[in-house]
Length: 108
Image (cartoon, rainbow, N blue to C red; front, side, top):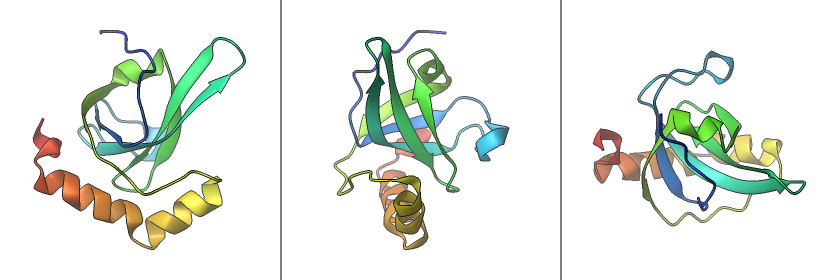
């Protein structure tokens, strides 16, 4: 698979290329980047939330399991996982996923 480096930004849209059982993500599920991060000098990554509410961080090497298909502006700033899940439960991320499907990005 092609290696993807972290030139991603918040609002990047991806499609899971395989399932991730630990976070309940199915192959083909849409994901939305809600955070990019650097740990130390070398470790970069991006965090994604998926349609069913699963979320996780992906290192540069793990990003190969996601197909980047677009970008949308999102009104969100990550603070902590509790706040992320509250925003999901209140409908913020489901709203974005409906918009992505309307735009056809789930078929990219």
